[in-house]
Length: 311
Image (cartoon, rainbow, N blue to C red):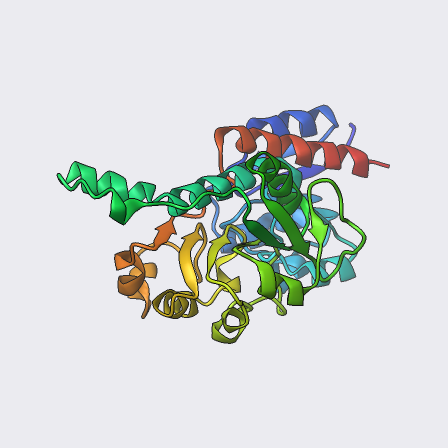
């Protein structure tokens, strides 16, 4: 009897991955309803583990997974995996930022245009019999300087999509150089804070980036800015954003992600009430990369990478 390697899928995943993996000779088991303790009890039988956002892979789980060869993250960020420890145990970690980069970029543009043109506020007012043209006068994107912090998959996708708006796109990436192109100009952080009209974050959550955007960070910008965060909520101090709005340092903030997400935890934060009452803040529930198309593309990207891993 031929031994088949087994993969445990513990988060919701498009069936395209399972179909491709089985064609490669793997057996895929559905563990979406399993809790951490249940997974700990059976992970010893698996060579592969597939997660998305809800499941955290820590040292204790990695130690229990003595046969584990790879961890696949259906998405971009790897902050819910102890990646360094996994790699020290010879476990390959793969993700799929290529699968949702267009979704995130389009969401960011949608948030930006909505804020700059007061579309949410205007819609609510008209529905409430308020016809305020002057109070909803907007800004045009043309001629603005858009600064991207981080120039990976989503940053590059956003830069390409912004070309048609006749904006100047610049990017700062601490770990990448020589990437200036027809779409973007590589700049220093000093240039970002001096020239930016719009700031969009596209960096992973690490020890270095946690809490990066705080009062001090925002104080360095020379012009009032629109802020977009479609990366990770913990990168931005929400109270600092609200402080900057009060000081007219931020004209509008589009936040798809927050330091605390989901209810009831979000409603218990010290800044929630101020956040939701602020008309200059536009919120969405961590869905920038979660479209009908990206749901499938993420699985296809993971399957491609799984196939390339085969000896």
